[in-house]
Image (tube, rainbow, N blue to C red):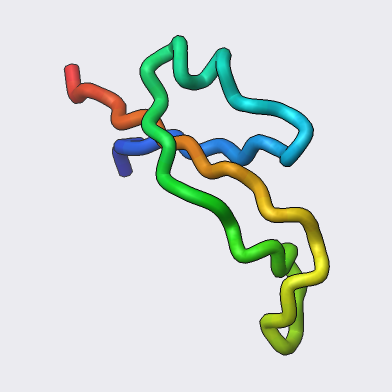
Length: 57
């Protein structure tokens, strides 16, 4: 199995400048539900999602 994409989440207090400088693409915001939200209600802070596509060697 090959790893094709790396993703990361950035909290609302930060801009993600280091990820932007490293070539990560900004994908948007999470819904703020958290990992174990049983009913899909957003009660956590929304985070920025960045992804980096790995180049196959």
